Length: 360
Image (cartoon, rainbow, N blue to C red):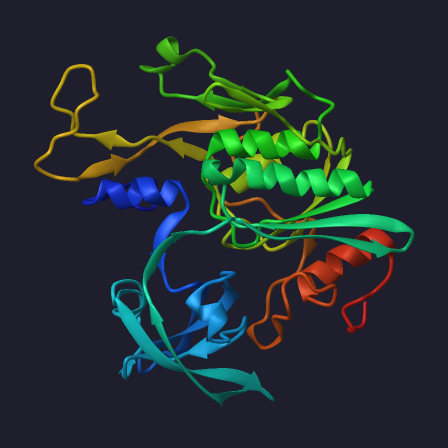
């Protein structure tokens, strides 16, 4: 039942699933969310949360905060909005902006194609010099193993800058690789190598065979036969921005760090996915190496619960922030800009300086 298991699913195309784990999906070059346009008409709108660098959407000038109400002349409704945006090869639309509380036409029209290209989850990394501090900011949007080195490179830059504080923005990060989550936690810290980061709890039938499978803080990223030294910041405190879209491996990082360093969570309560899953294929050999060539169905069931070193893992209702602040569609701001509301509030917490332009 969905109320018991919200996250297990089945797919008829495991190639797409495998590509998704690599950060490769057919997309329009933008990340978006839906909002209700009219309850009586059952219509919705899509709001652009960010535009993928070097995509068609960026080249054509699409921006964060742009609103889309129809695709190829068809109004977006609850029943067909996702289909129009995800399953249509080429889409055309006009955009709107919130001006004085009203959706106002921008006068711009876009035509975008679904392109299956990798998206680097390290969207923004930069350093703010404020209040006598060097504050690293990382917007990280997926735990994708193929981009572990790109993540480590961002921390190399932070380390070279001699940063004093770190803001990790996971507001749009729905999770991914547990190994990548362990690497990220090790980059943030560095003083706990070899200590337990996370513990897998399986059911009573599997647990005797699995034992207490653990993830450990580490000094190295392992890629095949290579070991890549992790660029660690040795932080004793980290600020993490979250939202209702923050899930799974993102929550694992927050929960896994808490026994070791102070985690200040800013934003909204997370989804509450404290479980891990595996991919189950239909194999035609006993060794589980040859996939059935007749179809591409596969299952992605939840199979375990993940706890931190102190045995804490019951957060099915989400992880609540220390400082509550939500994104507001009419005032999204520019991601990575110190006046963007969620980042501004986090910077204020670190420096005591209000950069949002709003009253404290």
